Image 1 (cartoon, one colour):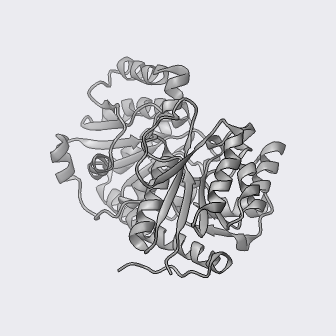
Image 2: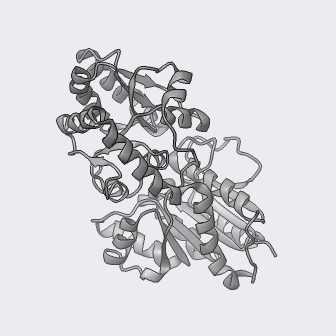
Image 3: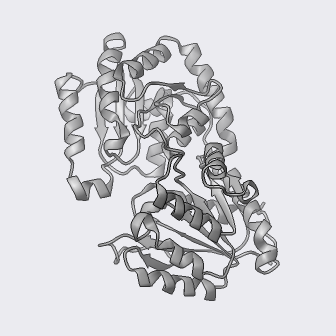
Length: 390
């Protein structure tokens, strides 16, 4: 018998990292295993009328507390064997998303929750909430070894309840940049890039300031800032952060060397830009960040990477897979970029190390790992067996 899975998370056409991630999990799980997969999508306020694809069978209204029990009843009556929740605290209503506990307590099926945030120093309320979530679910997935260590040491979660499944990445060949640069009109440029939804925590001002020093040494260097402003940021403060960044590049006379691609990139276009990239940069400001989909994609694409030393970057870029700058330090960023541009052999060695590590993270392997977690719970559900597709 084939397993029937139910997934809960934000979902496209909503533009957020968890939405993209949830869809990738669902799509690749379907490709890897026989069986049906359905989705319950989380709607933030003001977007109740969003049009979802056919696999979305229901929506959870984030700010309607009564809706959590309605969705729990739907889950209990649904033929799905297991519920998988792609969790981020900001996706759910109540203080720090605490209303998710209403749903967890009311669901009578095995629950696998993927925690995309694990704080190393939680306050009292967050500690209580995270421990409550972990106690209510059957199994926990985290996206890094760092996250697992924190759950065990800080939150007291039993090690055997946690599985590390890395962020999925596209399966792309290890190849040079020339063809992609030619397609994008970037031949002759040393391309540095950052992609993702833009907000103040990204630290892009330090990257742009670093380009002044990089350009003095490598005049053909080009920094591409790929992506639109995060919708939540745009609602609260408009485009003030992007305008602040634009003012910096004008002040530093970097109009030829820093370009904003101000739109939400479709998958194929994103892969093309990554393929044209010589150095990938994540100058993020949050030292406790335990996962970054953009960094994972860059590793999986075999890019030479410069990053600030947030927790996920420390783990992913260890053993020569990338280079760590100081936080909020344009000089440090610039020196590492220049070192990689000065030494193509070092850059290529770093690329090969990143790509080799990233092979374990391609989506087909990630789907297989999720399948193993789900299959271990099937005797507690309906005695089903997952079958891997050819």
